[in-house]
Length: 209
Image (cartoon, rainbow, N blue to C red):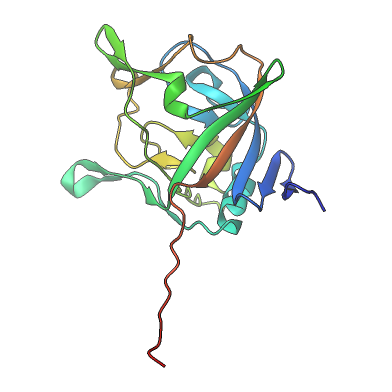
């Protein structure tokens, strides 16, 4: 048994049972430009995603479920009301972990991003991630497997992990850009760490006898 509690789950995915954390192998693929995702699958949206991950979204979905988290639903367009309904699901904490020389480093996704406002940029607020869980396509396939939408920062109805607020995917309205001053060099191997944003509480009832 591994002393640190980390067990392989699928290719590119491990579960750290001691910390109830899913570890997904990833690589930095983008350091500049507008963003639609923080993490995507290979050969999908690498031109608008900081990380590419090498595990199938289906297997990431299963691993997140095994650590006790419940999927909700991705953002969806409500035609009658002409609006987007935000994604729902258990709150998630995302981190990137990589080695810089001999130093192990960690970063929250927003540390690698800037908020775009016309010609200015600023640090974004803390991003509130949820386990949206993606959808099953009409042909029975997992939508995130088809589109590579692992962790999205704009509205995709196929997102496995999404933000709890809505943001347009239209190119002229993309609200986040990559921060080249903070993101490690392209090709840097890292891990996307996924865990619950809040720890479950423990309720104890004391009987009078």
